[in-house]
Image (cartoon, rainbow, N blue to C red):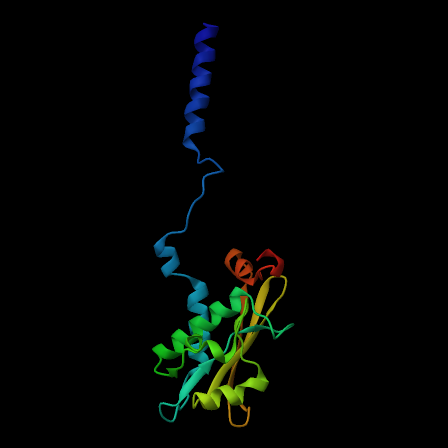
Length: 186
């Protein structure tokens, strides 16, 4: 009798153990989850709010600079480059004549940091592309959020025409994008 009871208990434990999902199994995100990304939607919305009701006054080219770290404007993490790409896409989708800066390697592409447009470079680069406006911005990572500040700057006098600020939650994706590659790890 004890033999049957022990065997039944072991069988029950084995069946119950098979019902749970092992903790070491990776659950990959789905394409539906990626399509519904709040990260992408929030960044598109930020640009839409920045350019809402803006009179472009023609088809003048616009440049989009890499969004840089507010604490070191010479550097950008993958987050800044990703934001810039999404902003440029949204502006182009909204009818702006956005110039793709990565096509010109001699302009201001910098190793490991992507294309950075700093204030002292704006006029020269904008003039060479006949651009009257430049989208620039900074990000600042804090404990729970990364704060992003966007500015639409007129190139002829560096006047800020529009500005918009928003925050991203420091979730796994944002934290991963904030990581800057170690220069020694080349």
